[in-house]
Image (cartoon, rainbow, N blue to C red; front, top):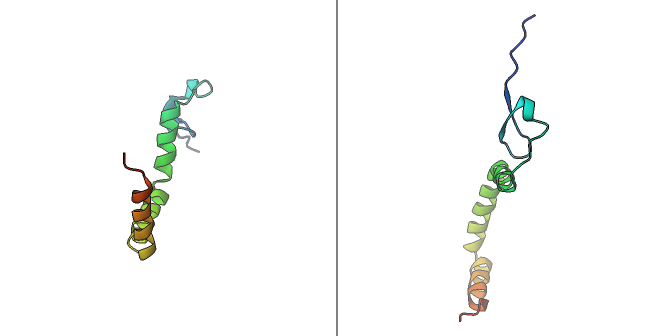
Length: 76
């Protein structure tokens, strides 16, 4: 039976950083990298939300909500 070689580096499941196998237990994730990695994982859901929001903003209710939000911001 053939054995496949083991990689020297593995991705961190929390932040996606490439970590040496020997350092895997001592790796500490950077908070900013963790957020970027989570957003990357949710990119399809974010894209769907953006499309649905854009479509809603074209409806009469959406246009009114945008007008009301703009008006209530309190300009200077």
